[in-house]
Image (cartoon, rainbow, N blue to C red; front, side, top):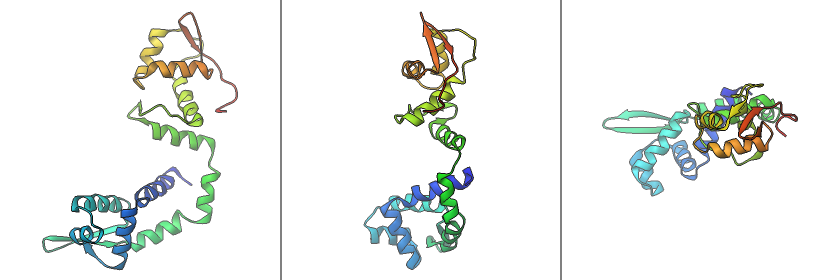
Length: 191
């Protein structure tokens, strides 16, 4: 499964993994509705319904058409059928399990790094090791770095540079002696 297909599938489940959006889809599958009608039927505020509809429109599950001064929403069954055929087939779903380790590492990096900065330090070991591997690649082999320089480099990615520095040493991506750090070849991949 390509990264683009994976992202579409993930977006679909993120959007439809909400009780109110599932109810909206069900109501729209029966017939067209306006925002105010949906709000009344679901006992929700109109702005909330509008937000749900906007998310569903992003993945092409709803269509909107003007009717006088109102906007009328309908369910886009063709989009759901196409997604089912293209992304939810047995082969496509099985491909998720067979994805290559590099693909998984790339997904982790895309999840945790935005605009060149780490959004958070992952808690899970596999994700943390992927991030540490990426950070270690910012350091050259055979170059000695004073602690201040290591801190400056890591600050570019996250404000908690001390934790990152400690994890890089603890997981043997960097070695340290008397305030001097250097990159080492790590054995064992991401285990």
